[in-house]
Amino acid sequence: MRIGIQTWGSEGDVRPFLALAAGLRSAGHDVTLAVTHVTNKDYTERGAAFGIPVRQVGHLATELPKLVGEVLINETNILKQVDVILRDLFDPAARDILDAAKRLCNENDLVIGHFLVHPLKTAAELADKPHIPVFLAPLLPSASFPPPGVPNLGRFMNSLLWRLGERIMNRMYLPRINKMRLDEGLLPQKSITGDAYLSPRLNLIASSPSLFPRPADWDATFQLCGAFHLPENGEPWQTPDNLNRFLAAGPPPLYMTFGSMSVGDPSFGQTLRLFAQSARLAGCRAVIQTNDFDPGDGTAAPDIFYISRAEHAAVFPRCAAVVHHGGAGTSHAASRAGRPSIVVEHATDQVFWGGVLRRAGIAPRLLHRRTVTAPVLARAIRSALSSSAMNAKARAIGERMRREDGVRRAIELIEGQRWDIRN
Image 1 (cartoon, rainbow, N blue to C red):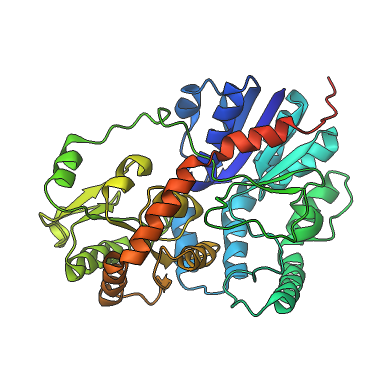
Image 2 (tube, helix red, strand yellow):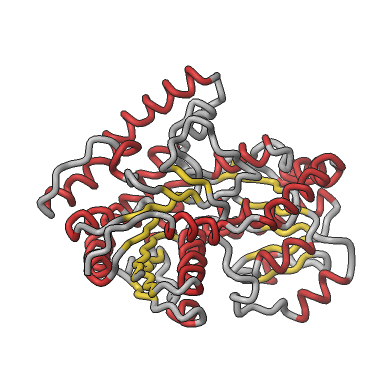
C-alpha cells in the first residue's frame, strides 16, 4: 500500500512515527512521512536512513517553545495546559499541516497520524481515504481508571469523571477543529472523545501492556500495541568515548533529563543545579542531559557528566535509575531498560505516566516541577535505589517489554483490515 504518515510535536511525538514508518517500509509499503517539529528540527536525514521521504511542514517562530514553557510552569490545570500548547504551538502551523495532509491523502491509499493532528482526519474525509490515529498514551475513556490528575474513585465515578471531562474538552478544543471543518465544507464534530480524534475502524495505542494493561471495556477498535521503537541498528549514534570512560569509572550513575521540557524551561540553569545538588545529596554519580551547560555555573564536578544528547536505549541500561519528566517516550525507555524512574512532572500526560509507573511498582511517588527541591528529589532517588523490590520489579518489567514489538503489532493490525483502496 501507499501510506502517508503525519505527526506534530517534539522528539517524543516524532520518533514513534519514524519507527512506524520504518517498519511499514520494511514490510514492503511505500511510505511518506510529514513532520512538524515544534523547534523546526529537520528529520529528512534520519528518514533517508530508512528509505523514507520526510516532508518538513511549517515553521514555528523560534521563541515560541520558551514562551509556552513559561506559561506551562505556572499552569496547574491539565486541560488548560493542553489548550495553551495547541493554541501557541499547533494552531500557528495548522494551515500548513492541513495543506500537507491534503497532499498525503491525494497521493496515498491510507493515512496514519498523531491523534492531535486533526487536519489529517479532515483531509482524509475530503479525499474519502481511510485514516488511522495513533495515541502515544492510553488516555481513552474507561471505567477502569480516571482521567489524569484525578484519584481513582471506582468504576462509577471514573466513568462520570470522563463524561464531565469530555464536556469541558468539547468546549475548549472543538471550536478550533470545527472551524477548520466548516471552512472545508464538512459538518462539525460533536465530541472530542467520540469522533473528533477517533476512527470508527482502528485506533492504535503505542503504549506497553506491561505498564498499562488493556482495559476490558474498550471496544475492538482500540488496540494496545506496545511502544513504537526504531530498529536497534537504526540510530546513527555511538556512545562517546568520554561517556564510556565515565560510566566505567565508578558505580552506575543516575541519568537525569527533562527531555523536551528543557526546550521551553525559562530557568534551565536552576534545573541543572537541581539535578546536580540532588545527585550529590543522594550520594550518586549522574549523567545530566543538557544543551546549555556552562562549566562556570558551579555545577561541574568529577562525579557528574553532562551530555547534549544520548540514545536512551544505549545508555539507560548502564545507569542505576532515570530521573525524568514523565514523557511517554522516556517512561517507556527507562522501563524497557529495566531501571526505576523518579518522575518530576511538568505538564499534560506526565501526571498520568508518573502514576502508571508508581502503580507498576517501578517509581516512588510523583514529584512536581513547581514544588520540587533538591532535598525532596534526593530522598526520592534514595528510596528508588535502596528498594530491592522496586529494582527487581523494574528488571522483570524490562524483560517483558523487550519481548514486545509495538511496530510489528501495529503493522499486523493495519494489514489485517480490509481497506477500500481507490486508485
